[in-house]
Image (tube, rainbow, N blue to C red; front, side):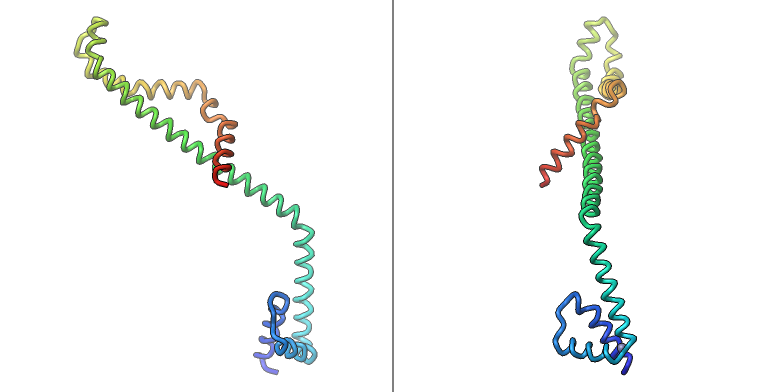
Length: 169
Ligand SMILES: [Zn+2]
């Protein structure tokens, strides 16, 4: 018997439980196993290991599968919550930038009139634009500091995340 015979035998032992092997291969393997104790021993070990693995997989499967799915689901929800939070932050930023522009534009348009009405000097109108550019950001920051949990409240986030999840299915 050559090394190639033993290699062929091991290859057939590994394949016979998984895929179809030809009758000729099967007959050759049987005759080799009856003549070669080393390969016969390997075949026994291989088959026993396979049975053991299958038995463990069957008993552990329902619980293992359920807990794995649960973990995956929790992780996916967590990631969606993070995405939703990023979207809300982006929306807040856009609202802030837009209200800055509107506020500065309003001051630029009507600041002179307001200054006159309040009896202030016209020279405050130009630097006043800076104040009105910053004012909305200051107001929004103040609101977020005052109500830190209302905007990014977890129930809202979870609801949004679930809605997105439902949309993806
Ligand atoms: Zn052999």
